[in-house]
Amino acid sequence: MQTETGQKLSIRVAGVGGAGVKIAAALCAAGCGGADIAAVDTDEASLRDCPVENAACVGKTATGGMGSGGDPATAKEAAISDLAALKRIASGADVFICVAGLGGGTGSVIAPILAKLAAENGAKLVISFSLMPLSVEGVDKSSLAERSVRYMRKVCDAAAALPNDIILARSALPVKAAFEAANMYAVSAIGEICAMLLNRGVVNIGIPSFKKAFFQKGLPTFFGIGCGKGANAVGDAAAELASSPLLGGGAAGLNAESLMISLVCGEDFEMNKMQSLLETVSQAFGVRERICFGASVDKSMQGRIRVCAMGLAGNPERAPQAPGAASKPPAAPRATAELAGAGKNPPEGEESAASSREEPKPKKSRGFFSFVRPKAKPAPREPGAEQSEFKFVEMSEQRGFFEDTPVNMRKGEDLDVPTFMRRNIKINL
Ligand SMILES: Nc1nc2c(ncn2[C@@H]2O[C@H](COP(=O)(O)OP(=O)(O)OP(=O)(O)O)[C@@H](O)[C@H]2O)c(=O)[nH]1
Ligand SMILES: [Mg+2]
Image 1 (cartoon, protein in one colour):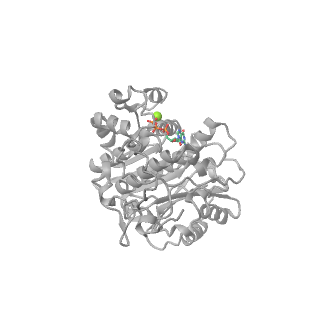
Image 2: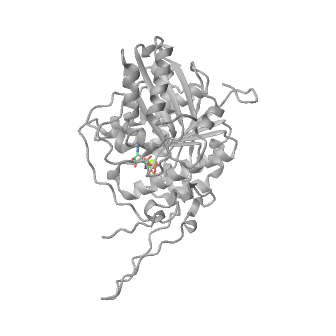
């Protein structure tokens, strides 16, 4: 595919932090044809094991080359000290795709910084894929991850959050294999986006169509996948997609505002079935406009189809992580035509028992990415002293490090303000 100026479209995928670097290595191994892969970390050892040539270890002075140790303030210091290296990675591509596991310091902080730098330095399309931490990893990580993903939504055209909780769904695979299998969701999704944009499909999606589907920044981006085979391939794939746990609770409740459908099918897949698939999927998501569609043929998919849906959710309450929705792990992803051709299909996901987990208690916001270190404990209260109602600081004063982003307003409500504050809900304990 070419840009408006007739130049070949360039795509760079940057893996950031431990998980991101592993995904970059997997993309490299799979051959994400035509896209240029880069890796960024604060941990030298993680990059040493990675075959990606375009790699940058940033912030050695701040971290000693040993990672941020889960500390966003250290990761921010690392980013600031090596801004030129980050700018180099973020510049020079028409499409910039950033992928990271969130919850640690490096991915949560440096991935959004890279996305912002890319948007400011000529990328026409900026997309992010974030793997959200397991809820058992604790509220600190999930709260940092959610702030990071909210920031991504503001700077990226599309910012998808793939919840490890749901993907891994108490998998019985060995830990390394389970993480690798989870990484293949990101590899698969990125591979398909690259295939669509780089003109290797039957029906291709260019940057303008992509932008039409992702017409507004700030809304949650959803991503789901469904597979089908045999006579009822269309019905099965559409049903699996519509109930994909990756969507965090079914297609209908998303109130989707837009939809990008990507189909990979065998050479035998018929036109009328393709039309029926499009109808069924767009009905399931309740979208009639802002739909874009891409399709590619993969010889190894004879009799089978795989359909991915990505779009903007109109329902702001649909969190990127939906604990409890993980009754069943999502359909195992298959790599793109090229990835599959390279024999790099991911391992099959396995069934697991329903897992009901306690939702972590939401943490009080300390402002968006402000990285304020916890204050010393307050002096004990005088016996009998009355406890007054805690007054939250105005949200406009809480935007912290990324305060330069526009306020995320929708239907008169600032979506960065937690619902209970926006709607003045008081919780009686
Ligand atoms: N799916 C998947 N998730 C991972 C993997 N490794 C880590 N994670 C998740 O990603 C989160 C962040 O981990 P890392 O990527 O190692 O953290 P980092 O960005 O390197 O941050 P620091 O090491 O703290 O500087 C973790 O809390 C895990 O939930 C992986 O290989 N696959
Ligand atoms: Mg790390």
